[in-house]
Length: 155
Image (cartoon, rainbow, N blue to C red; front, side, top):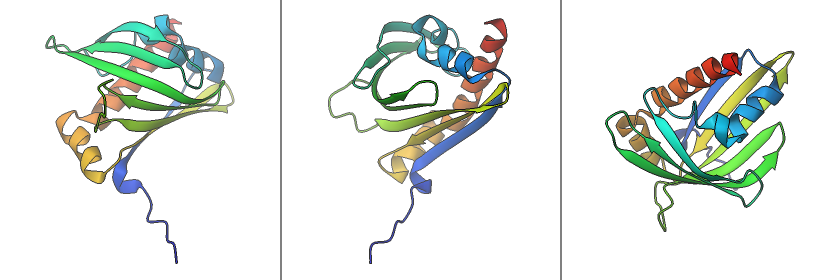
C-alpha cells in the first residue's frame, strides 16, 4: 500500500488576509519596480537584475542585508496563472544548490481583499529546520508580508 506521509515537516506556510484587491497584490508581487521596494525582512533592500514572470522565466536579484551582506537569489518560474498563483523554484543560483526550495503563492480574492498564502517546500525536514533556525524564515516571511501591506497602502 502506498501511503502519503505528508510534507508538513518540510514546509513553511504563511497566510495573510491583505486589505487590497487581488490584482493590486499580484502587481506588487510580479512587477520588478514594485517588488524591489518591499521584498525581504525588515532592513533588507534589493537590486533586481532581471525579472521575467512566465513559465521558464527567471528572476535574478540580490538582497542586501542590514549588516551589508549580499545574498544572491535566483527564482525560476514554473507556473504563472495571473492573478491567482505563482509556482517557482527559489535558490541562490549556484549549481546543484542543496538549499533550493519550491514555493507556491496563491492570491485568493475575498471581496476587495486578498488571502495570500505563501507555501515553501524544502527537500528535507533538516533543510526546513535550518532556514527556520539560522535565517529566522518564519519571522522574516511575516516581516516581508508586513512590508508588502505597508507598500500596498502607498500604491
